Length: 506
Image: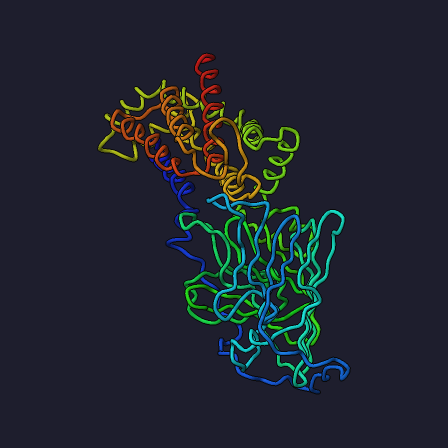
């Protein structure tokens, strides 16, 4: 019985620790079949009256070479082009990449730059050839100038397009209003060249959409164009810590995702002549996303046990508000998480001590009835009952802690708040591995000590096998973020203290 129990617990832990790394590589999420058969965009003309022509008073846009328009706030620097009124780059000032350079979220490669309108049935590069007039050549916001507008206008041959952008100095949000006349419906993409994703990370990178209440992820393995129907609440490109999202203010019932070269693109299918959007290009900070009141906070995926992860996340931030250090906040969260399990763990450890005492009697029964499994099982049950021993008592606490562990694992592994957050001494970033491997090696040592202190009924062969577990876990944790290793180390230390108390009391 114990052999099966230990095997189950060990396998559960190994699966849990490796799952988030394996699922993206070997089990990528496949998009569900669309209700609408995927077809290439044709050139349908909207039914009903033709759109009203542009006002006659508007002058024709003068053709010329495209030029850059820079928008700069305290949080980011964005470069637009008058060629297509698109984003050429979007650089975050307050976040650095692995080379200590500002994070560049968006760039404009190929024929599909961010926010470049794609007309149905037209040459895909044609919208980029439209040279817009702009209301300003540069826009700089500050504490004294917190809000600014930039308007791009195109008018030629009866076709009229106006893109209005409203920027805020203290927010990553941009309000967009697009008005058109005498144009076909269009697709509005987020852009394909996105993010600062580390290829070693297993988290999703690529398009994601929230249609009604259904969240779907896609990546470069997408094989067909997929259309969505129903209320498209938002579309986005994401990596582990950042996102660029496009949110329709009024309901839009269509979005499309398709393969573009080596990347996957996603766009809104816009049929209205006037449509307002919220554009967000920045960090996946839950509070910022929540304030948009558009459900974009759901782009932060804490996994199966999100209902447990969110309270843990709030507690982590609560401790940080008072301590100013996420390392110490993790330590306090680890203690707070373990406290409710102390009574259960005590009973479990007491049960293991009792089981260890009756081990000689168990061995006698096994030897005596080794040719009669049914009689052996009956005698074992009588022995457990007589000595009030629960053979699975040591497994139960671990199983109860699994949902909490998964939830905290996801919080510590995905919360951008830990990115670049220092702890102490050489740990200058809790979101990356310990550069000197001190934490994982210490964690492995605590696992060895805990094993030696814990009562066991295993035979010598099983005990030797179990002694390899600290080695396996240590190697697994070498590449884990320091915040995760810190959590596991503190949890082990608390377990050692509790086991010492039980052993001394026994």
